Image (cartoon, rainbow, N blue to C red):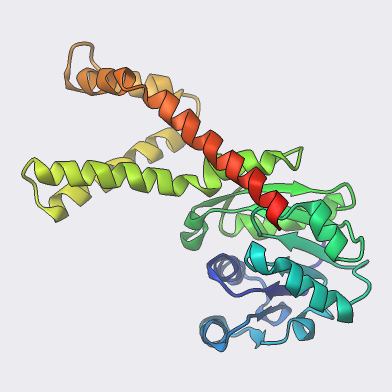
Amino acid sequence: MKDLKIAFIGGGNMARSLISGLIKSGYDRELISVSNRSEGKLTALSRDFGIKTSLDNYEIAKDAELIVLAVKPQFMAEMLEKLTADIKDYQNKLIISLAAGVTIERLSSLLNGHKKIVRLMPNTPALIGYGVTGTFATHDVSAEEKEFTNRILSAVGKVVWVEHEEDINTVTAASGSSPAYFFLFMQYMIEHTKTLGLNDEQAKTLVVQTALGAAQMAVKNPDVSLEELRAQVTSKGGTTFAAITKFEELNLKDSVNKAMDACIARAEEMQKLF
């Protein structure tokens, strides 16, 4: 499939990460444009990537073959109502939405019934090329268009396709929101390490580098289960065993399950709001 003319509506962090990834992968910057409500982000995007920018959504979207909706969910309806007043027919346009909580049914209703839509749930590590994006496409999206979408998203990390739109809420709990879980766990480990006598730099280096190393061990040993990797570090009766036993006594698994379920419940609530 040929490279498409892409218009990003919204110039925030996720749009910026995708634009950066595309250009680094060799995508023609002349085919990329972006609009935003304020000039500050547009100035930075134009300076950093040499792409066309505009305060006018219609100006960049009218001739685009792919429109990436990268605005906040609470602004989606207002933005699309204004855009569809000018663009009546989206027949030849692929729509990709990054907005959490805005269903395809809702997007379609705002796009005059258009159904060639892909819904994404990215995460913030995409900003440094280590993201993972949960992705769902309607039946109206062709195999070629799905492959093109995969190519775009692969520029900033891994891509996971799901079969049902409701699975996007599970993706939100497992990856969209989960960087914050890991940050919180590391934060608490660092704080306690400092109370035990090490300084901030020592504590942060020990915890963050260990988290990175553990993740890399999981990545580089795909045929070894996490349970086995954990067992390799856990000698019965040793120090690690004592820590893991305490986690189990405190029912860490139940806390994780409840936290993820709360995330999904909130995602379902948001679908009714927007």
